[in-house]
Image 1 (cartoon, rainbow, N blue to C red):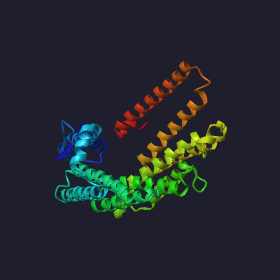
Image 2: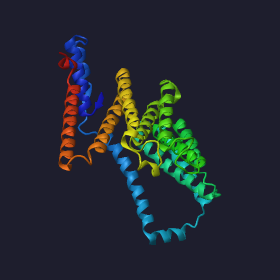
Image 3: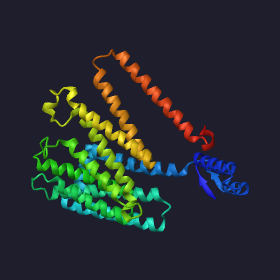
Image 4: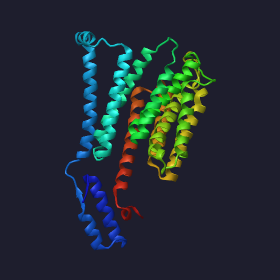
Amino acid sequence: MLHLSRSKAETVREALDSWQRDGTLAEAEAVRLAANVVATPFDWQRLARYAFWSAIGCLAAAVVSIFADLRLLELLARLFTLGPAQRCIGLAGVAVGFYAYAMLRMRRHPETEYRNDALLFLGVLATAGSIANLGIWLDTGSGRYDLLALVAVAVYAAVALLARSILVWVFAVVSFGGWMGAYSGYASGWGAYYLGMNWPVRFVLLGTMLFGVAQAVSPGSRLGTFRRATQSLGLLYLFVALWLLSIFGDYDAARWHTVRQIELLHWSLLFAAAAAAAIWLGLRRDDAMLRGYGLVFLAINLYTRFFEMFWDQLHKGIFFAILGVSLWALGRRAETLWHLGRKPAQETQP
């Protein structure tokens, strides 16, 4: 028996009906297959996912609340008079414990994927605390925070490869972005430019590099497990950085206020071209991720330009009326396309 949510079960049954009407599938076979599709009355899988993440959020809130209470903080300081070295080693041991237990559960109980991911996430948090205390322990005043980020990259990448965990791999890639930002900041004396590039331009290059690496990885290889996550983060870095460039350009904060809007036009055009390229490539490859990023950031580009050009020129009532009507039209079109996508293929054909 195949247990699916109601929407997915409906989709499978519609596909079976379509194949039966087209003659692709015999009626008896279609009936037999449909009988094995069971719609679950409640999406327990989604509830499990939300419950574990909510549990971690509550634990984090509990820790923050404890440390926000000065009296409890003083009590903890008296009970645990540990230095950064002891805290670093202790948290590292906690992280290893979480990672080991999660990997053990992944071998014995692979079906409890959300519980296993939650344990890995707790290990990620313990690792971050351990590395932060390592920085305090070994601090020489040099400001080399990039080395700590590099340690995080190495630890998270190793754990992700051992556990085949996309969740931990995401933290490895995010830490790599942190390392790049910290290293370029240190090398430039924490100025606005490094090798003639401001912060957004550097992350445009990082996003492009991550996207390119993801395309070069074979889906069937060991690293292929992380291909989609790397591509997604690369696109996120790329488009957010291009969006910032379309607003601020390749200028520092002091010069940006004196720049005319027309001088930033080429960044807006580059932003639009990158979004259009993502849409085109997504359509060519039938890649929903590429199409989604392209469409979302193309819309962000257009609305950002709308705010820039008409916020001071138009009456605020007219401004928000135009904005509201355009968003209504966008939502109406999206709803129409969603309903078309839910119809059987033969109903949408002319």
